[in-house]
Structure formats: C-alpha cells, structure tokens
Image (cartoon, rainbow over all chains, first blue to last red; front, top):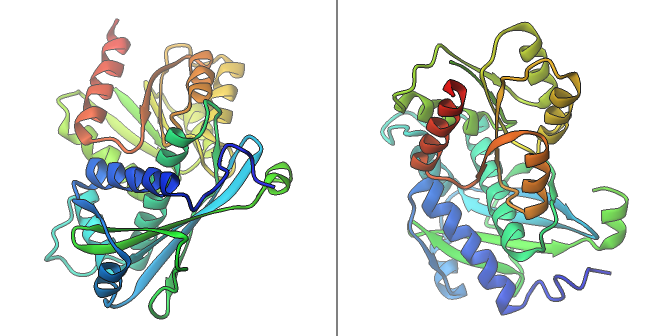
Length: 170
Length: 126
C-alpha cells in the first residue's frame, strides 16, 4: 500500500508537480526552455533516433517508488553541452558522459519533486541506472508527464513501490 | 584555499570545479572524491579548508561523512557545505547539527553556487 501522502500518482496535481520539477531543473541547471507537451505533439517529436532512460529509486518515510526519465540522445547531448560548457561542434561526447548526465538529470528531477511534494522528511535516492533503448520508448497512456525541452521530447514516469519496499530498502 | 568536492557524478564535480574557476577566490587546489569514504581518505592525507559534499551517494553518504568528521573532531576549521537535491526541512536540520555552514539545493544556477562559495570563503577568513 502506498502512503496517503501520494494517493494518486496519476492525478493532474502530481503530473503538474512533476512538470514543475522538470521545468525548474531544465531552466536552472541547463538554461533550457521547457514547455508542456500534449501526447500527439510528443509522438511527433519522438520520431528521433536513439533514446536513453534513467531510473532512480526513492524512499521517503513509509513511501518508496521509482522515477524514470526518458530522453532522446539528441536532447541528452544538448543538455550536456549546456551543463558543461562543451562546444556543440566538438566530436560526440562519450557514452559514459551522456549516461552520467541523464542520471544526474533524473536525480535532480526526483529530488526537486520530492522536496516540493513531500512533507518535511528527508529522503534517500538510489544511484540512477541508465540504459540505452533499442527503439522508441513505450510510454503508457496516462502514466507519464510529457514535456518538450528545447523542442525535444522528455518523459518522466513515477511509480509507487509501496510501504513494504520502503521497509525493506530498495 | 584547498577545496574538496564530493559527488558521485563526475559531471556535477566538473560543473562545480568550473564554477570555482570562474570565481575570484584564491584557490590553491581542488580535489575530487566520488563518495564519503574516498573523501575521508583525502582529508586524512592533506589539508582541506572547504568541503562541498553531495548527500545521496553510494557507499558512505554525505551525511555519514559529516558524522564521521564530527566524531573524529580532527578538522575543527573545515568549512562544510552541502550541495544536494534533498531540500527537506529535516535534512537541513540534520545538516545544521553537523556544523554545515551553507546548504545549496540542486538544481542551482552557477551564480548561486558562486555566492555560496564566496560566503564559505568569507567564513574561512573570519
């Protein structure tokens, strides 16, 4: 059972909170423009090459869950350039740098969302696990917050693992 | 001034190091560690004036590192700064009990980090 603190992770309120966290991270750390994105527009934008997904587990009191952040390779590279001051004309960054960037992005989105959503309790985040997807991401119909960052798609999904998971660690 | 950056993300360490380079602070050395245990080994082997640490890290976390520093009581003049995604009130209270001078929440803009560094450097001189 999930804590009463987050009764419905798919509610418009939670989606708005997640979108707000994404916008804060995008604007403050990457100087990027972040806009809400309807599903149809997202699907249009999503017709881009390779994708990466970063998953971070969180635990906050009796609540435990997972946040996944799915971004196209092009957006990851765009954000990496903004974050590090790298010249976009330089040769492609290595895989490790992109994975680290997407992991840190998911970490900051999750932390910002929890700080704003949760109570005054401290929380714990796992080290993000980052993977390269072989094709387009399969995002559920209603479980993802969709935005466009610098006109490129970004999706964040949150799922609750319940109190048992929180009690036993991740 | 000798600065130790503790964060499991090489990207974040690089960003912090870059911002330090943009300040007008007189910095002799910037050293990096990927977790609390590595940071502790560095503290034991060389002089450090300013510690910038993340909280959530694999192995020894930032809070565990700060507790160990407090328990050992060997670096009373070390200025401690937390840089973390966790901005909760209880984490901030915990930090205050561990003699943390500044608490910087991620995401931050380089300008905010620069202000925190100047503030921390100011407390080194006073």
